Length: 309
Ligand SMILES: Nc1nc2c(ncn2[C@@H]2O[C@H](COP(=O)(O)OP(=O)(O)O)[C@@H](O)[C@H]2O)c(=O)[nH]1
Ligand SMILES: [Mg+2]
Image (cartoon, rainbow, N blue to C red; front, side, top):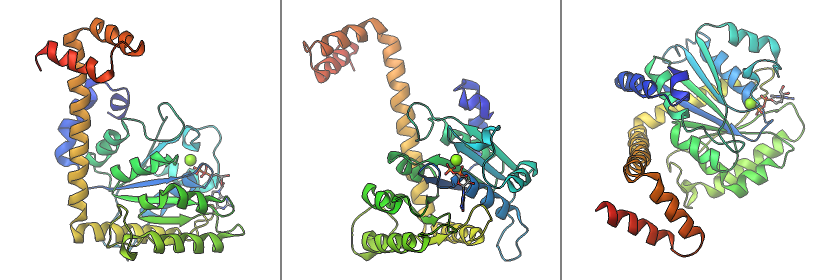
């Protein structure tokens, strides 16, 4: 089904329709950040941690799905980076399903079918779906809209904290992780990020689209050894509980549903309209608009007039 969805085969959408009533049970977690910060290594560790029988956690995690939207993902086979043994552990656990997909177009961002693939895993009964994406400015916002909890990964000594603050990336974060805590400068990075969050958080009196009731924790990890990872998993569980208890989960779900319906409607109305009009007209108008003989709005007016729409 994932392959059909990724290939944008209509059968994929049929499968999703059948699965849809069973979705909405998984905790969808986005993991984003600059290349090389250790996202893939961390995602592996989070999956391992979720699979540990945890008497101190409310529910058993069940199966864990991983979608890596990363052109340079080590999941694609070949060169496996990071802690090889742990990677193999995850790969051998039949309850962890890892799927790698390429980004379309520019580096980073989400493939258009990523959301549908996450839905399919959710509907198939995965308790957690982890989505790794390369952060490239807009990607953080995209993943924050799709996921219920967004983890932004930073690493010390990359000037990342400055970039994150500048680009407003922190606004997308529910949890901030400073990975590579074994490297020098981690403490400074943690402090800089905490300061930025306290200054910029709506709870601290400024705007932004974040949840005013949730101050993103800044956690330290060493993904290569797994140090600090249980705290990340605990923070994820706490955030999910927070979303449920405050009703934010439902608010986000509605926003997501509205966005998805609108996007699909826009795309399909356009396709249907152009099919009925025939591509000849469009090409004709494209020439006129490019040649400055017609403005884009006049072209649309003309098409709508002719269609009586
Ligand atoms: N020193 C150190 N290296 C790490 C840590 N986590 C990941 N790495 C290394 O950083 C490199 C990039 O890791 P990867 O998970 O592929 O990063 P991604 O591009 O963000 O997915 C690899 O060589 C990892 O072994 C860490 O906590 N400490
Ligand atoms: Mg990666």
